[in-house]
Length: 465
Image 1 (cartoon, rainbow, N blue to C red):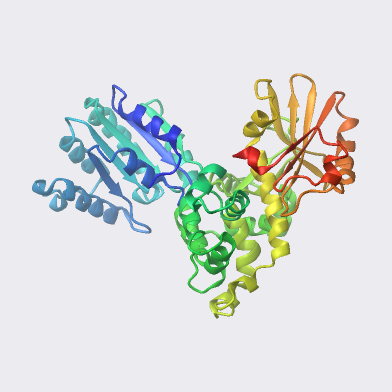
Image 2: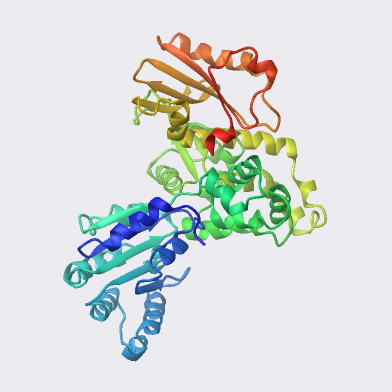
């Protein structure tokens, strides 16, 4: 079943119907639904799938590729062919698909290529000399190691300008999440699930196993055989090299709202340099962490902070890992909810909701009615200050739309005003323009707040839907 993905399906259809041979790179986080989408989109086509195997060398990858090829061409005896290189494999494959409409699906490309550029270079040669002679032939490179796919395929000099297109598959949004969880799930419960494990289809399926999202989450997180207990290892194997520094960076950020690079290096006990830059860059490309700067600073600004970006990883390090030994012993098997600190979870979801709103700033601009106005959106903070405004829009019509983001189970009261006023003091001396005050709140506002008329707009979850 495919939920949502209308734009992606249109992209895949256009790619299939293009009048020339081409290569499409599909990438995204593990479990985001890449394989399901591709197989659904091309279910009526001749789809030839070659899938890589985890932690196997080149010779094993080629042998298994030949075995998979034989299932499509049983009379060609390709599995017994004396083929030891990707160049010979691609030449054989090109001869088998030299006419007619074919889709070659190279799945888990990072494993097929053993995280090397050799296979990419061989594919480039084969495409130039064999594959592109069939204008109805389409090649899809798919992988769940975004940093490898971006650096070694999309940015590869070998494949540059060779009919190369890309599709970055993102997690589901709130509407799609609620559709997957089922009609009986409330809007806030759907958002609870989205903020906790992200809009990852397979994760959300595990949240609908029991009578509530919270109960399902606890069962799958705090019992020895729970899906989310061991998912970290599965994500890491496909997305990252097995280097402890990756996990240390994620763990530090999962415990804090944000950190600067120097703060991270100090806690890691590492020196700055190109190797550390690579670790940070790879985690960003995987979508696990994100680097940000004040919205009114350029991308090259040295005033930067890092924060966790992947909801599941943040949840794992905040709630699962601290009691992992007790989980393994079965201490929470009968009452898994006992392991989950509800107050801490509510606060943690509040931070996650701030990130969600920031990442959906275009949607909020449309809700607030100024999407036709040129603007830039982001976070605002000052150097050496722990305070920050999580979402602000600087608009071309000389208005600052400043958002206070709250995620609570009860309507927000007027007690939010003094807190918000302190944040506005950071802006009034720096920006000489009108300020639109906006409250974004999951549960709406109570009468004590609405009667003040303090906020120009109050946005609730129903506006997101």
